[in-house]
Every structure is written in structure tokens, then in C-alpha cells.
Amino acid sequence: MTVLRRQGWKEIRDQIHGWILDRSYRAGDKLPRDEDIAARLGCARSTVQRAMKDLADAGIVERRRKGGTHVRPDPIARATLDIPVTRTEIEQRGGVYGYQLVRTQRLTTPPVIAATMGLTRAEEHLRVEALHLCDQRPFIFEDRWINLHNAPEILDVDLTCQNANEWLMQNKPYNRYDFRILAQSADAEIAHLLDVPVKSALLVTERTTWIDDASITTVRAIAIPGYQILAKS
Amino acid sequence: MTVLRRQGWKEIRDQIHGWILDRSYRAGDKLPRDEDIAARLGCARSTVQRAMKDLADAGIVERRRKGGTHVRPDPIARATLDIPVTRTEIEQRGGVYGYQLVRTQRLTTPPVIAATMGLTRAEEHLRVEALHLCDQRPFIFEDRWINLHNAPEILDVDLTCQNANEWLMQNKPYNRYDFRILAQSADAEIAHLLDVPVKSALLVTERTTWIDDASITTVRAIAIPGYQILAKS
DNA sequence: CAGTGGTCTAGACCACGCA
DNA sequence: GCGTGGTCTAGACCACTGT
Image 1 (cartoon, each protein chain N blue to C red):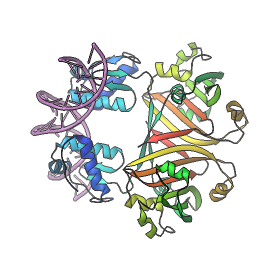
Image 2: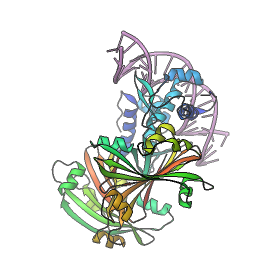
Image 3: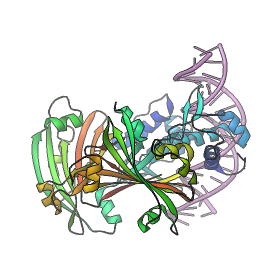
């Protein structure tokens, strides 16, 4: 529980974190008020505030007005995932990106998709199935539904050569999304598309995006075996 | 590109985000300096700063000293995952948590584990295999390696009744970790332990934790079919 | 109602990186 | 060098919530 000086809110954060790591304060303990910590460490209260915000975001402490700051008894492991554009992801691996449209259809939403998108009634969508290739080999298969009520311009895009995701990113930025990760066994169709054995275990990510309450698109991306998602501390 | 008033840095953030959404500023465009935005929106520069930090963290803009703030051409989808303690996770689903030790062994690390933990030489570890149960049924199987050099006290813990993860959380807080998500097909042993068909697709999360450069534990958690990881925007 | 964190401000200085 | 974002400060007021 030493007190050192000089240099930035991260130092302050690490000091406070240090008190927890060295068990000066333990799971559930209440930490001093920001103002007292500021006085002890010789900085302004707002600097302690920033340090504390970082610790709270990391799931290490819990703050409540009037209640004060407590060490979390069950520190949450909070990971930040960056989900890059598939093209970028492949290029960062040193591969050559390729794209292949499989099929498009105009359909009204089946109930399961409508529920995912939070629609109160069925709306007409464009369903786009496509393959992302890495060095000419299948890498990710995507099954996407685009809400034609909220993004009708997609009909003017030639999806045989332009990737739907990239068009949407440029033209339909979203401000809310939802994200799921799960495992799925390859059925005959997927196995054929990805060129992998039937029953391979595949990592699937599902994403839905909205502008306010208007759903834009929902996509199910099925990756080849061996694909991993990495997160950083 | 309207200018409204009153209430908080989130309003400021949403205003700026609005300029991007309504395409007043497009992919790659340079936004005005913080100070000019502050003047236009009638707030202090530090308020714009906070709003901008949020947009930058969300992957919507990119900031560089001297270079200014630009709209990201490829907005990264950045998701935050909360990985709860398994007990908490099960209880939040309304299930009854159970724990069952399968096996413990003292071993020196095989190369693949040593590499994951960043060890320069093999060190003695305690390997703990255990099942987390939800309403008496298998839910997650975990295969854990605990570094006896850095956490020798684990040998004094009765792991038949105390969950290794919970002991570590209380007694060996970490300050760095690494995280992977992948899919795996159930082999005969796992299928038997989890009581699922062989070749089921299972979601696997692997985590390694350190205190500074000292590795504490690495764990591979294999979940039953249907398990999903959810992220929030 | 009172204590604590949350936010805002105005101003200052620092650090990085482009010209 | 110099422009821009990054951080720090001291003080003020607000908002939530436990008592």
C-alpha cells in the first residue's frame, strides 16, 4: 500500500489495482471515497475518477452513488472483441481475399428472423448467401437478410461483384447491434459449400444491426474448422 | 447537421455520430477540431473529448495527434463480452449449480500448455478436470492447469468440494489475460462426460491468466450443445 | 436528507507526429 | 516548429440511492 508519485491516471489506476492485488482490500471491501484517495495519492479527484472508471469497466470494482466503491467479489472477465471486416481479416493473415455470391432471393421474413430483428410484423427482405474466400478456398459462408424497408437501395447494387457487408458499412452505418457466438455441426449443404466433412464443428457468429429501432440486416457467418476468435485483456 | 442543446456528453456524442449517420461526414472525412466542435455545440472542449473517446473506442472514428479526427472507413464492430463465473451464469438462468471433480494430477507442462502460458521452461502444474452442473446435468467441462510455482497454495485446497476457479478468483487475482473462442467436435470421452452424442459441435473457450509475467492458470471450458455467448453493443 | 459518484467547465501544460 | 489530441486541475453543481 505504498504511495508513489508522478505520471498519469494509469499510474493511479495501477496503484489502486495494486491495493487489491496485494490484498490490502479484498473481495467485497469498500474502498475510500474518491476524494480521500485523491488526497492520499496527491492528485485531483477527477483523476481518481478516471482511474476508477477504468477499473469499473474492467469489472474489477463496482461503484454506486452513495454506496461508494467496492471490490467486486466475482470479478467479471470482460473481453473486448474486434470483429473486423472479413476482407481485412483475411488480408491480415496474409491471404488473398475472394468473394463469391451463392444466391439472392426476395422474401418476407420467416418468424425466426423477424424475432431476431425485433420486427412486429413480417417485412420484405433480400436474402443474400455468399462465400468469403481465402486464397481461393472457402473461409466463411454468410447467410444475410437485409431489410428492404430500411435499406431499399441494396436492390441497385450488383452483389455478384460487390460484397453486401461492405456496401452496407459504407452506406448504412448502424448505431446498435447484437451479437452471438455458437457452435454448429456442418450439415450436408454447409459441408459442401465450405468443402469440409459433414458433421465438422463450425464456429458461427450471428449479428444484427439497427439504426435506432429500424433493423438493417441480420447475418449468420459460418466459419471453417480451426477458425478462432481472439480477445485481448 | 442540426445543433441542439442541454444534457451531457452522450448528447454530444450522439450529435457527432448523427453527422456521420446522416452523411454530413463520410468514411475517411476529417472532422473539425475538438475546440471548434465545442464552440459549435456550446460545451467545453473536454466534453467533446469524452464524446470522441467513446466514438473512438467504439471504432467509429480514429484520432491522431496533429492529424485530427477522421471517420473510420471500415468501422470495426467492437463487442464487449462479459464472461461470468459459471456458478453465477447458471444461477442467472434459474438453474441450480453443481460441481463435480473428475480428476487431479501433478504434472510438468506438456509443450502445448507451456507455449500457451508463455513458459520458457517446463514447470510443475496441477491439472484439474471438473464438471459444472446445471440442475444435476453436465453443463460445462473444464480442463485446467494451475502453475504450482506461482500458486502453490492450491495444493492445500480440497478441490472435491471447492471449485478451483472460485478459489483462484478469491486468492489469485490476475491483471492480464488472454482469451480464445473456438468450436470442437465431441470425442468419445467428452461426449461421455457431458452426456451428449459423439461428434456434437461444442463451443470451447480457452483462457489464460497472469499476474504480470507470472502465469497462474490456463483453462479450456467445453460447453454443452446449444450454449451461446452473447455480446452487447 | 445527506453522502457519494457522475458530469461539466475553463484553463493550463504536455506529447506526439506531420511539415 | 506547431497544431492537434491527451491529460491534469480546482471547483462547482447534479443525480442517484441508502439511511
